[in-house]
Length: 490
Ligand code: C2O
Ligand code: CU
Ligand code: CU
Image 1 (cartoon, rainbow, N blue to C red):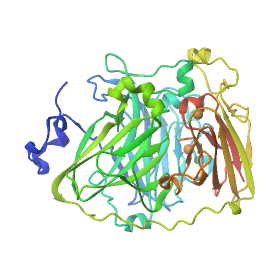
Image 2 (cartoon, protein in one colour):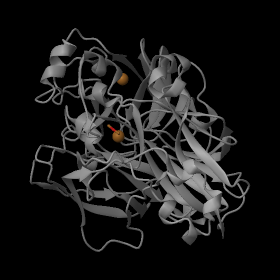
Image 3 (tube, rainbow, N blue to C red):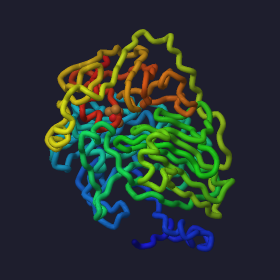
Image 4 (spheres, rainbow, N blue to C red):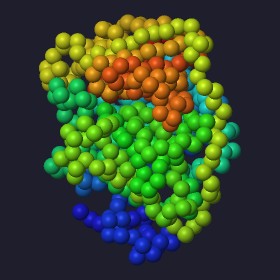
C-alpha cells in the first residue's frame, strides 16, 4: 500500500518532518466531510441527493456504496435554531428509502421515519423547523425493514444545530480547523477490500459487526495537525450494532455535550461507553501536549473483548485519530467550566408512566429470515417490544402534547440502545443506577441491559396517526427485525 502524506504536507503546516515518526507518516489524513453551512440563511430549497457511489475506504479497492451528495455518507449540515430548512431529498438509489432526522425536535410529518417513504426516482420535500438547543444531531435511512443495509452502505450524515449560546461560548467552532466531526463506524471488507455485509441468525442476534474501524469513511487510524489550543471533537457512533468504548491516549476525556446539547459543566472521564446512535462532544487540550490520540475499543466490557480479542492484537484499544500540534496558535486556550444551565430532572412532573420490554425471541426463524433478508424483513416479526413486533399499521402508544412522562424500558439479555423520536429526554436510571455524569444531560439514547432504565420525557411537537414517531432499539438489525413501536402525540 502507498505511504500517504500526513495531513496534506507536513511542511506546509509548520511541522518538521523529523517530528513525525514512521507510524505517524503513514496515517491517513482525517477526511473532513463537506460542510453545508446554512446559517447565513436559505433562499431556495436545499437538494440532498441519495445515490449509489463508489468509495475507497483506504483498502485500495472501490466499494459499492450509497451517499448523500457524495460517494459515501453525506455532508455536515450546520444551521441555527429558529431556522426552517427546506430540503429536497431525492432518491436515486433504485429502491425505496427514507431520511430520518435523528435528534431533531420536529413534528412527525417531517421526521423522515418509515411512513415518509421516498420511491425510487422521487423527491421528498420536508420543511424542517429547528426549535431546540445547540446540539450535534444526525440523519440516516429509516426505511421499513431496510434501515440496517441502507445506513451501512452510507446513507448517514451529521446536522449541527447552533444557537446564541453555542455561538457566544468560548469553545472551538471553526469547522475543519479546531472543530471536527468524527463519524465512527465498524465495517467489514472481503479479501479484495470490498465493503461487505452478510447476515445469519447470529448476526441478527448481535447485530452486524465489522472488524475494521473507520472514521469518516476511512480506515483508522487517521491523523490531523491542529493549532495549539483546544480542539473540539463531535463524535457520532454510526455503527449498526457495536458499542464503542472511547478514551484518550493521554489524560481523561473532557466531555462538553451529549445527544441533545451542552452539559452543565465539563465532565472529566476516563472512558465513554457509546452506543450506536449516540453523540458526544469532547475537548482535547492541544496547548498542553504535542500529540494525543482518540482511542476506540469495540464493545462494552471485558467479556466482549475476550471473545473478540484474537481479531485485533489482544483486544486493546485502537487508535481512531491522532492529533499533532503545529506551531500556529489556536483561538481558545482554556477549558470551560460552566457550559449551560440545566435543572436536574424532576420525575414528580410526570403524569404518565409507560413500560416497554424489548424481546429478542418471538419464535420466528432467524436463519430463514437471514436468507430472505434481501426481499423482506420489516414485518417478519422476529423481535418485538411488549410482545408485539413492529407493525406499520398499528399505533402502540398515544401521548399528549406537552405531557411529561416516564418511560421504563426493560430487557433480560444483552445490552440494547433505546431511542425515542421527536424529543430529547433525561435519563433517570440506567440499568438500575444513575447514569454516568457525561450522560446526565439531554439525551435521545439510553442503554438497557439486564434490568431496566427510566427516562423522563416531554413531547412538544405533534405526530399524527399517519405520521407517528418511532421508539426502538438502535441496533439496526434489531430495529429492522421488529424491535420497534409507534406512537402519536396530539
Ligand atoms: Cu437514529 Cu429511529 O433512529
Ligand atoms: Cu431518531
Ligand atoms: Cu436491540
